[in-house]
Image (cartoon, rainbow, N blue to C red; front, side, top):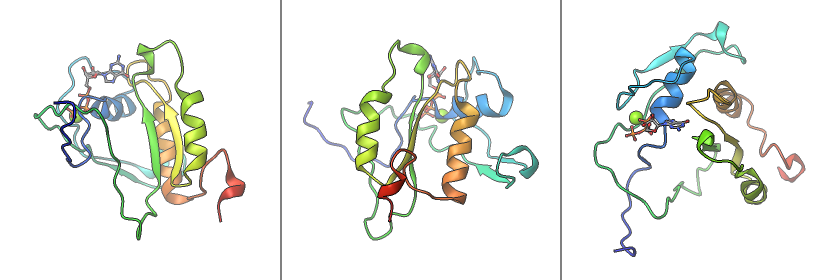
Amino acid sequence: SRNDLRLADLKPPKVGKTSLIMSLVSEEFPDDVPLRAEEITIPADVTPERVPTHIVDYSGNNSNVTANVICIVYSVNNKKVPLILVGNKSDLVEHSSMETILPIMNQYSDIETCVECSAKNLKNISELFYYAQKAVLHPTGPLYCPEEKE
Ligand code: GTP
Ligand code: MG
């Protein structure tokens, strides 16, 4: 029923995780996408921040849990992991969701940034991984309200 709540590890299926990684690595949208991409280390000299970056694809889970809600769960005593909201498949919609998302993001300093991208059109792919790398190396807080960060 619609009221069933199933709590799983965060593995939203089919959002394009594997495609994003493969689009980044081969600069080409994969027509046949495997369940998960091979682990890969991007060498320092080709990353914007000049640090080697290890990318691990999470999931490739066959069980297709369809979700009515996705909860991102973190421990409040250890919430230093920066969150980046990634809206993939932007090629499928006419209108950007940014207008809706930005005010939300500005309320939650735990959200480092959000990015709309498309593995298919190779849009914002390198930017996405750059933001992720940057969030680890120089956690600065939300891009759009830096003054609110303590
Ligand atoms: P699981 O490993 O099963 O959790 O899925 P995933 O998150 O790795 O998604 P995957 O990369 O396998 O992509 C799922 C489907 O979405 C595939 O049919 C992709 O071709 C499609 N897809 C991925 N990215 C995009 C995109 O940017 N645009 C469009 N239109 N389709 C996409
Ligand atoms: Mg996958």
